[in-house]
Every structure is written in structure tokens, then in C-alpha cells.
Image (cartoon, rainbow, N blue to C red; front, top):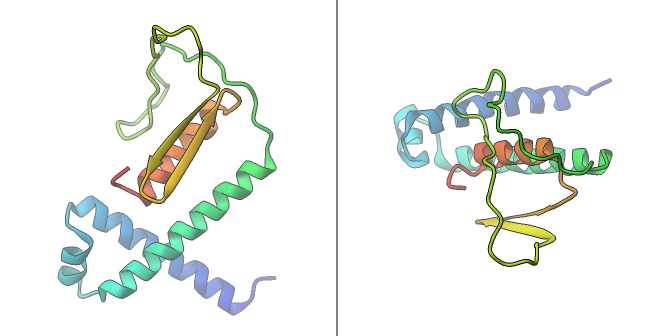
Length: 138
């Protein structure tokens, strides 16, 4: 059974997630948005940081919980029911070198993402969506 504090924290996280989404959709900087809405920017950044930590923790738990199947070849068909903001994968032509890299490392700010041949396309897609939501500059 959840404690009262756990329930309050969950509700606060939901509330602030909506506020952060609204800020990003507004096109305003975090400071301009906070000023417009009468929100203390330190409070906004605190909750943004808490949500980022939670999303990273959830991702790490998901990654530990499931084994990664081999990557399937990319389909040239469009993804069914795909929205414009969904992550899409494009087939890449092979480089002129004969040696194929065994992993790919992506970096953006504090985030470092290593993709291997064993990384499932679904996990990569979910991870990129989380990163897009948490770090809009990436």
C-alpha cells in the first residue's frame, strides 16, 4: 500500500510533467514561460530534474528487465498509425569501408547512448523518444 507521501509525490510529478510539456509546446524558453505563468524558475528546474531522474531510472530498470533481441532489418514500409513526432528510422547505405562497426555511440549534453547490433529497434525508438522529451536540444 502506498503512503500518503508517495501518492502526493506521484501527483506532483504528474502535474509538473504537464507543466513541462506545456512549456515546451509554448515555444518559450523555460525562463520566459516561468515568468509568464508566475512560476519560480528554481521550482520549475527542480521538478524538471526530478522527472529526468525518474525517466532515466525507469529506462535503466526496463533495460535490466529484458534481454535485447537481435536487430531486425529496417522495413521500408511506413510505420502504421505513426504520428508526425514519432521517431522514424531510415535505411542507411553501407560505407565504403569493409569493416562494420560493432557499436555506435550518440552523445548529447550529459547523455551518452551506445547502440550495438544487439539493441532492438523498439528499445532504441523508446529511448530516443524519452531523450527527446527530457532533453529537447538532442
